[in-house]
Length: 188
Length: 198
Image (tube, rainbow over all chains, first blue to last red; front, side, top):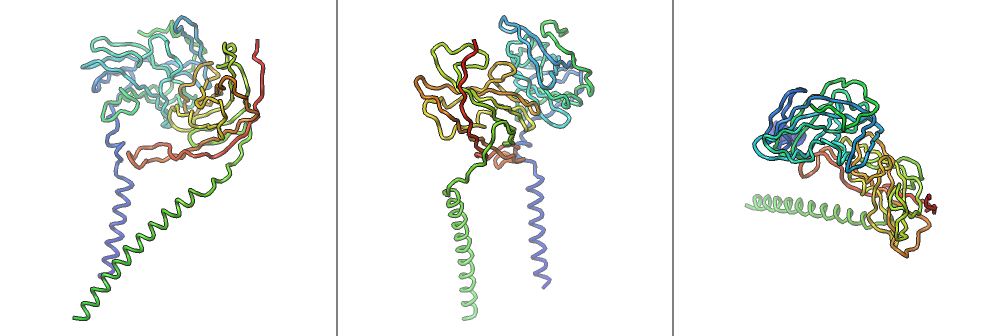
């Protein structure tokens, strides 16, 4: 009789163990995911392939710029968040293919594709070692996604076993300006 | 001697039965599945114009369909006298990440002869081609299909809206994602003919 109980107990234990492993073993995507490089606002983070420093965050309701000889004005249902940053390729040339505004709630906003041709847009040109670039990342986010956000910078949108710089942005970036002209922005 | 032989027989029979039952069960389940798939597809719920519908990662509301001579929301009439079908819709990204897979939301079903299968999605706010939608920021979008020259303009357009389900861990990489796209609603919209604005 006690043998049957022991068998049953072993079975239940094995089932629990398997269920636990299925639930809590990190998945392939997690194991081979980005390697986070966490840092503060204004600090230079040196990862594999590039270094990044975020210096300033600005909010705007409208953005104005000149692209391909035409004046363009963009408005939004949320707010534009601009991050002025400095990027440098570390040992070799690299293209920074991904900048993401991660809100405090966890939503990921990829840099807006509505600004093609805008001046000093980061992430579009290839970086060369020894030639740092200063410019902006432009995000379009709802107002509730502004506070407590994190800037994620990486060579690709879903880095695999590669650096992802994670910069905690200022919790309260201030009130949005009615309009910002990207041509007149102070980048330095 | 006989007892042990009988015990061996019992063992063999029971193991064969187990294997047989398992095989039959698997066969029954797969046959049932293919039977279910072969059955007539259920009638899709009707979607009225202007009513928002949650279709997986998108919230979509269809508005009016117009027959127009403009190939883009703000442009002049197309030079070769081509005709276009323009559909206004409100689109919101319900997922937690910027996304550009909106082209899979809508399908013209049944297909209309002479209608170009891949329409262009325009962001009305920018009068530019829509490249991605940010989560939580709904936008007015115009979808424009080109009609082949000489093709008869349809009187109504039946659109099927596809939905997807979210899986926190997929089967291959254990990564979150949207899967199992399937039609969840259908809308039949009248095609209104409009003159191009001068």
